[in-house]
Length: 275
Length: 293
Image 1 (spheres, rainbow over the protein chains, first blue to last red):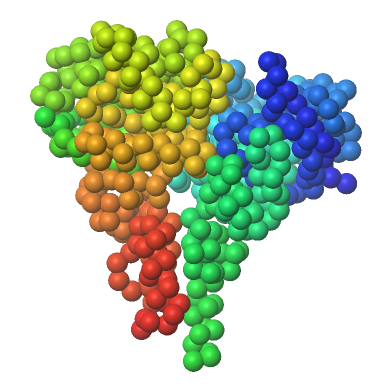
Image 2 (tube, each protein chain N blue to C red):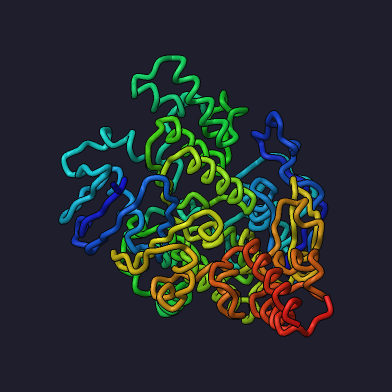
């Protein structure tokens, strides 16, 4: 059974702006999925349906087979955790530790369990040494990681990240990628919205492409990146390596530097053998 | 004219050294940087390396708004920024901040009105104001958003409103602090195209960025900061292929990285590429067997 399933979802914002126009998709447990598309294409609206912050005007969003329609967001919190784009929309405690402890406390965890969860979550995002600081003494990069930690401490089955790479520098993006891999390895399904195609190429196996409230492509990332003409219609370009792969006629899976090096080395050996 | 930054060090009033941090109390230390009229200078470096602080020095926000301790001098179009009010610098230099929330006035109900605030306050004629506003909206690619409310736009759209509102002031120098951080890839390309065009028309541009792939072909000069000091400076080709780059926390463009990795395998010979186009040329030669690696 899919952990997230959208059945023909339509959604309008007040004033009649149509944000989702018949979205169908299904995400299996343990997958890593990137959602891409131009600004305003409905990515955030879709993700807000996954944890019940928004309810479909038509159609159904199923989480673990149950419709979000009748549920409160609090009931869904242990199933789908959403990390907002702007950390300052999310943070409200006066210490890093308390911010992360809030979730498990509300779940009624024991003191020992709370301590255990907060420590592990802060360790995962490399903020354990900052546990006594005020969140606003952290840099914006660190505050974004703090928001991720506070969701990790709830231990939801799905974590959805809304543009986690904005305000991160290059090494910060790499660090975030290894956190995503670590989280996914622990069995959590990771969904991210992003404009950073290198981040997608390196860390997400599947990519969903949105345009004007519709899903226009959905498949393995390399397959999606091999269709630049369609991506262009929603203001997206494949990762630089995927563009290069197309230009030189390389294997379409060579969408990262590592994979491109491997393809060229293999190709060289092949040429050497046949020469 | 241009910008002369002479042995500048700066410390924020609330600066404290955090445990485990490698940097000291000074956000910037002994910065010497001369920027010529018409030059496009890109500033690279990790978050916290001093890029934004350097941007705020150039239009006088430091030391007028952020007090702290400033040593040395910043001269912009022959004006010492410490001695001239920020308001008197607006025709010389405009700054686009990283977070559009910091930029939008909150006083305007429409994008058009937001972009109009600058020219109106310069005391221009109505015709001149209108002309500038329309052109700025067009250049930032947001003409169709003119009647929308700024705070109902997406982050990416707000970012372009911020760019337009500075463009409408027609400063001779524009400082942009990660102006595309929230934009989709094509929106990002569009803003870089605007920057490229303004540069070709003679505007002086200082751009703080992380997107090395995009700026490699744009910049006249690249400056790399680490812990508030200039550690590398020069032509994009020299800086972005410099082996010391990684130790400063900056990664080269992907195409450059590919060639560096292939050189280690004795497959790539010669200059490293900065763009997909250059990488393609080199790789086609390799794949056609025209190399001796």
